[in-house]
Image (cartoon, rainbow, N blue to C red; front, side):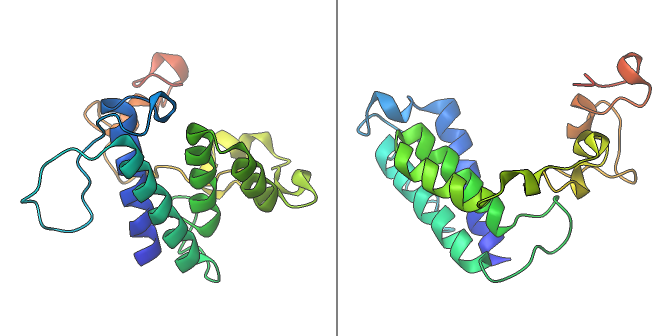
Length: 168
């Protein structure tokens, strides 16, 4: 659980930074977002983009370390060691650390990348939570609301393109 929470903090900081900061490639010293690493909310100054990315990398490395020898708590709706590494690879890509991207990607894929492919293409979308190609997904189950106000309504369409949601 602790590893999952480090991952969640990292992905939140990354998404905030992508939305409200300049790209990392535009300079580490540009204003970033407010870093939250504790429950103390007395400081609301923006960190630099570099400081934000350093914290994201640190959180993802800690998440991966904590989850390395464990197993996922459920299907792909839960975060795993591989999920943390995959996001770390993307962060390194944004940072221009291409050697680290290749290192992590090769570690994830191993010597035979085809072993990670799901032979049943329907699983990739219809049953994404159980497809071995899914590293992590936002789980939306049948017992949750599927009305237009839920996050799943952006994607869910019970009747093809004519139902509710964007059906992307």
